[in-house]
Length: 73
Image (cartoon, rainbow, N blue to C red; front, side):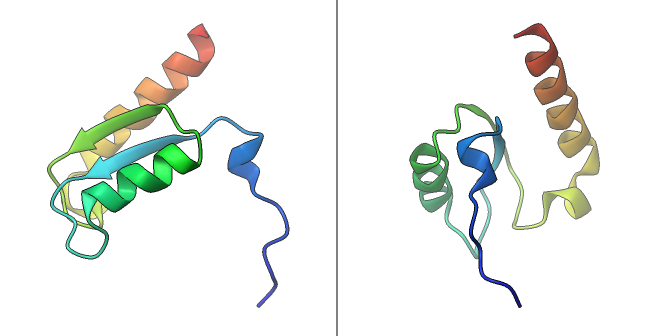
């Protein structure tokens, strides 16, 4: 395993999908991480830790929103 030497989110725009029903990483911890990383493009879903399995349509919608926001801005 190699050591992380570069934090891409510091230079490449990022987005975060908050999962309010996550029992592994509480939503408040998710918010703190996103804030610390400077991520402002976010959305909240009522999902557990793996939203792409439980609600794939919502994940696809969010990705489309992110792409459109980046294309417009």
